[in-house]
Image 1: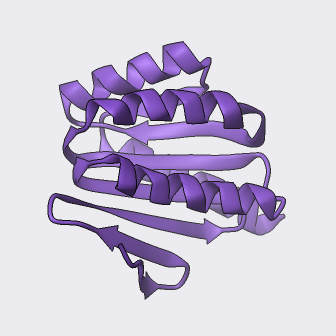
Image 2 (image 1 turned 180 degrees about the vertical axis):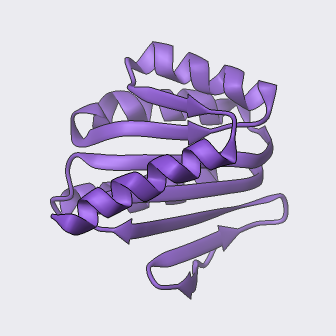
Length: 142
């Protein structure tokens, strides 16, 4: 699966059922958008991008995960997300997550509980986008 640069620092990977778009609007702010069906290959692309930023010294990494267009996901995605969060928790700031699907919201709640995460959940795009804009402004001002 080849990544496609879609502008600035944004990259997109897709397969026949879903896609992931990863961006760093400013250093230290990670924005990922999942679309359609999320499988482990798409999820791994987001993990790899976040881990690369952490290795480059951008910690704590503020994370914004847009799941508004997620329809379904492989069950193992939830397990792998839990393990990834446990391993990377010391390097992460707050994790902001936008969800519309009750299935996805349930999965995110489980990951947060099992990983000791610091999730802030949103069901409305406006609140999520406002939080992202605020963090980007603060990070850019530093």
